[in-house]
Length: 309
Ligand code: CP
Ligand code: NVA
Image (tube, rainbow, N blue to C red; front, side):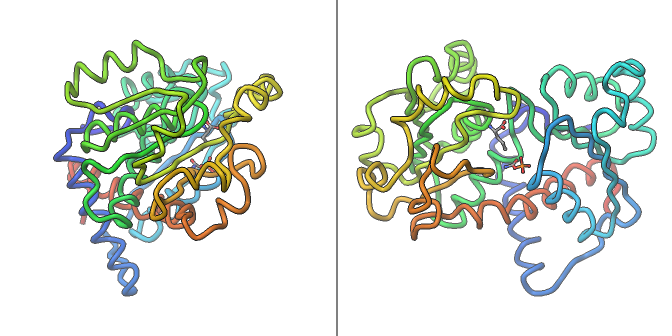
C-alpha cells in the first residue's frame, strides 16, 4: 500500500511518473475531459488547521474523477481525546478509500499510516508539506521545461514547505538554496539525512542574497509565521524583515527568474504586492496545479489498490 506521508517514500522515477500522469489529466481537463476513474471511491479529509487550497483541491480532484469526499474538522472526528488515535484511524479507514490529514504533530499522520488500513496522504504537518512541494516542481517543469540544474532559492523561514521542497529538489536534481537568518535554517540533522539518501544533492544555506540570487531560476517564499506559531509573530517579523521578497530583492536575480509562493501570502510581510502581482509571479498557476496534482496522486495511489476503473 502506498501513502504520501514523507517524500522519502517516493523514488525519482515515481515522482516523474506522477508528473506525467498529472500533465495528462490536466491536458484532458483543458479539453473538457473528466474521465470517471474513481467512481464510487470515498476520500475523507481530517484537518486540525485551516486550509483553502489543500482541502478544496482534493475535493475538486475526487469529484472530477467521479468519486466523493467528506470533511471533518479534527474536533468533530474526536482527535481531541474522545477515543484513541488508533481507533479513529481504524474506523475512518473502514469507511474511506483514501484519507488526507492536516495536523500539527507529524506523529498523528504516522499513526494513521500505521492503523488506517487505507492509503494516507500528508496534507501538511508542522514538519512537512509533500503535496505542495511536488506540485511546485511540477509547475516549475511546466514553466521552465526541464528543471534539472535550475536553481530554486527559498527566501525566508526554513519551515515545513522549505523542508519538503529541499527533499523534492534533491530527488529531481534541482539545486536548492535556503536564504535565511541562521536561526531559521533547516536543521543540520535533516540536511545530513538528506545527503545520506541523495549524496549529490546540491543544497546550500546562506544569508548572502547576492550569491544566492545571481543564477536563480525561481525565487520562492512562504509566510514567516506558520499555522501554530502565532505567539512568535512579532519576533519573526523582526528577524525575517530583511528577507522580504520585494522588487529590489528580485532585481538581484536574472530577469527571466520566476516568483513562487505556496499561498496563503501575508502581503507586505514576506512578499510585496508588486512582486506577487508582477509579471514574474506564477503563484496562481501554482495554486491551480494543486488540483491537477491531487488528481494524479489520487489515481496513482488508488491504482495500486486496484480501485481505478
Ligand atoms: N498552500 C496550501 O497548502 O494552502 P492551504 O493552507 O490553503 O491549504
Ligand atoms: N508554512 C505554512 C504553509 C501553509 C500552506 C504553514 O504551515 O502555515
